Image (cartoon, rainbow, N blue to C red; front, side, top):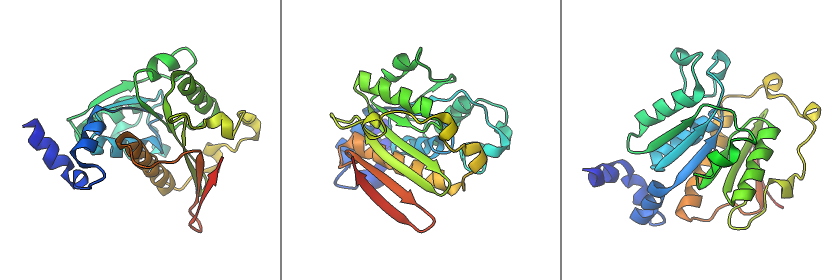
Length: 236
């Protein structure tokens, strides 16, 4: 029954010669940790889950609030006040009951980062602050883990892959985190809800490519300006 379920669920992607049954098996065996179940994390979680990534971890200590709903598409008004990690786990399980979801309802800190990250193959960084981004990066460098990085501000987004098969990491691009006083506050600057959907989907796409072994970003930063559809790829 399991083989038939897998075939019926995933056959539209296994039909691609670049994926096939071998690629689907890689997805099934993969373990991906998503840091942040917000604007970026929601589409990442949806797409890697429905593609068949076998084990997915979700790290988020926050609760669902009304202002989240225009862009954090896993949640509805009935989820207000509840844990994002727990709700995201429940919703994703309903999308694909064939996979395993682990929810970590806690803030990622220097005390727990190694313990949580060590159990996963690829770390998707959908966090919204530099302290967490650098903690994720430095922990992944220590553990030899690949990081899929994405960020958004206003109408612009960024995408990169760090620390994959001896590639460069976040500190090679930005050696030190900026002073918090010099960084635009997302809560004050705002974002159109579709932007994190686009960048998050790109992060999910890159994650699936990495697992399957398809060509992926290497020492490159993608800059995506959506007001005039400028798409730039910078080497670093």
